[in-house]
Length: 328
Image (cartoon, rainbow, N blue to C red; front, side, top):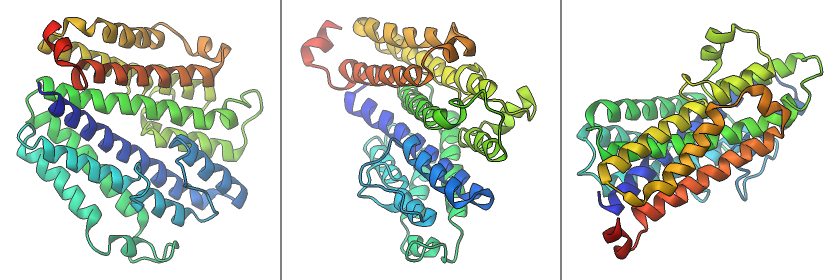
């Protein structure tokens, strides 16, 4: 596969996963506003920013609707939801001949909906929720559109090398985002694990699970007994839940192995080792082992390894020299 094609498919998928993750965080926390005080509001929205990587020049100023508008529509912020949708659509345009018509129609429809004239004003007016539509309705529409695109991709695109690069982009972005999300909640939830839970902490635990689309799945495994060790175990180590770190890394490794097999890259052994080491660290550990060490350090190491995998993917499949390609 041409490097430009692999690059565009990879980033198209990463941008859509990033948009869906940010959309879900905003939607969950807007809904939690009904049950929070001014103090807890400050804490929760600062945590949202931390989970999104503390974006530069984006600040919490006490107005959740102004912040939501900025994180949704401000294209000067390259990871805003609209910026991600625009970038995903642009990458898909570059590889229009490689994706299915249904994929293009789904992504283009999302782009046209998000960029239609007057969209921002219909949702917000001067930073306040006085628009003609509810922000949560738009956020839910974006989430549904991304889920539909993923379903269309799985059902209309041949599961060859191109589809595997889409999987790599999706799961490396999801693993990084989940690690950052758990880290953002760590100090307030797991940092006081020995203290009896307060009412607002249960809301925070529920918010964390909902931010990872995990609340209902968690309850099916553990019932509605929300305890920090079980929540950490589920989001980190559950092998069957699609948004857990273990599931994401397992899926990433599976896609990388399929790409190596299809491309015949004999130089891909360093990438296999990187991904295999990360997979093993999640497959052969327990939540007790993780909690006995530095949880934040463990999560940050996962993020470091994901970046290393990303860089190695680029060296092997995107930004390689002609000599390296001939040698491979």
